[in-house]
Image (cartoon, rainbow, N blue to C red; front, top):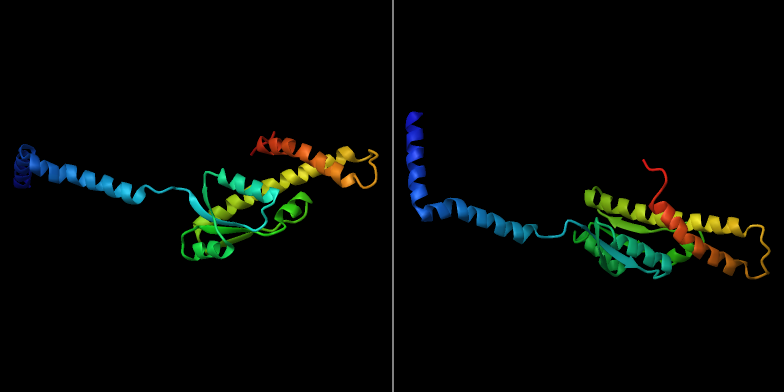
Amino acid sequence: MKLAWILARKDLKETARDRLAFIFLLAMPLLFTMFFGLLFGGGSDRLPLALHDADGGEAAKQLVAALEKSAVLKLTAESAADAEKAVDDEEAAAALLIPEGYSAAVAEGQKAALTIVATEGSSGAATVASVIRSVAGRQVAVGLASRAAAESVLQGRSIGPGSTDAVLDEAVAQARPVADQVLADPAATS
């Protein structure tokens, strides 16, 4: 064992004196590690989401804007077929298809369906689906809260025939920012 230490010490002394050996033993591995790290590890840590908006309405635009602000997702606009193909080709963790009529359903406080296309068992897809459900759920909650507030304010007021929908829409539009702010900063948190 003592002989091994003597030989190792001798080799280390020789290596310390030889600059070329130092470069190949220490500097080159570090440079290769940095090079390949930059080459393969320089991508985004956000999950890619292929998005197709067939609706194009106000609620759909708000949903897309909220998803773009997510620190978890990176959105790419696609056609419906391309969005599904991106999931199949593993270029996207999931695809979100916003159907025509989504904005109208959200505005009227009705059930609004979204289609999430994902590979079964994918943890990235599960994370994307969770973010989508959270953002869409908050959007629907804001809509319902503002509609309920507007209806309660307008209840008992005399409104001329035919103008109820317009007055309600205006009241909902005024209540929406308040509901959005309340849900953004709730009084009680877990």
